[in-house]
Image (cartoon, rainbow, N blue to C red; front, top):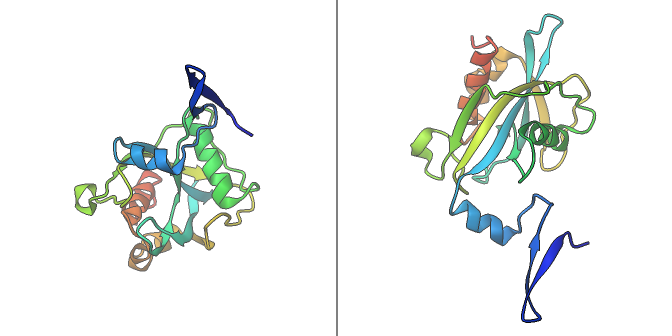
Length: 190
């Protein structure tokens, strides 16, 4: 199924332009990655008690952009024309399964914004592929979470376990720093 339009010059087809899909071809993505920052979302799934206090944080085990197997938060690109809220929901479902039941308010606001750079010294957040600006969210999930896509596993950690040196050593690309910022945001940095 082609969701694009064909452009012609003097009756000769010159190419097809994709419209409405929000996805880029691998070639287009590489060109854009080399030219402009991309918008991403990072989401830290959490379990909360009856008072709203965070009791556990969910971390995925998956292959990072640098090729290492690392503990990571849910992360991904925002598609063209996609609302940020919808991108957060899409990535949570993609990585945690359709029964995760995230509780996201109608109008979302990130707890922080981070910039990932190919140069690991630039900001402390590193992605060897490109410069990306990521809006970071803490998202309560109430349902059954099962790792999907490329994730090898999902581990639920208490705030103390999540802030431990052992967990931080399992994270790359500045994800450990992002986790610390999230813990501070929810008042659980111990």
